[in-house]
Image: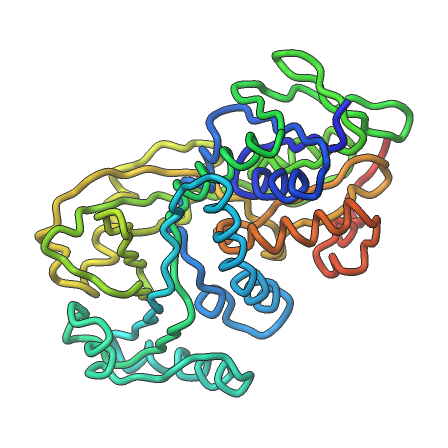
Length: 372
């Protein structure tokens, strides 16, 4: 029996497995498919809480804390594995192409500036000094120089390597079929490749987390939202900075690609790329950088992001049960929130203290039907 069993091998499950292993715990991770094959791969790897969270509150605070943790997290991962995860703090531009789009952006800027965050309001001309390839049509926008991005696929590779080097057991290609229960205690899971037992099980299965918690008679509103993403070659298109617009984002990577995204499709558990989705991605970004019209297309892919009813993650124990918790519902912010999720969940699993997890506890959905 292992100390902790993580169900789900995406960025959240692997990040928590890495953190627990670093603290000397025995850890097993079980994944039904490939490591990071769902939401973690359908991402541009942006580290941009000021862009993602428009209003002050717990999500912005969580995102800023995670951004603060990232440099040390990356340094430690790279030291253990020798893998360059291509972390880049190149700044981010949120762009308005019309005067109408600029109005809510300026209100957001005023709130963030008043709160002491590192943001600047820029005219179109000033933004083009930061990013010369930005369209002449840009009217104004927010520049956040402390934000950036990471290569999410290299990050996943590094986490897999680090977990293995720290002694974690990684089991892929194994589907969890039910929870193993003794009384009111979850003692592990049954899988298509045999039983797995642990003192504590953490459900970190992304869009599938709701299904697994349903097995325990507790309903959490987690649903899959398909994200379709594309990449083009950066050859001849020397973008410096991440660009966000109302219809898409453009993320220059250090490995010679530019990642473009992304759709948010209610398509159930269908993961395939559609022509309609790809068209929306490409048409949505080209107005911001005209040079993209001549870019060499590379590939398109999709993954399932776990969305919750209140747009906040689920962190902590499953009500009514012992030995089982959930770490999920990060929607499109799993890459950003992975270091802070790993830390706060590992702290909880070590101490048993739930207070630091407020207001992300699954018990906020106790109005749902629960039975054993």
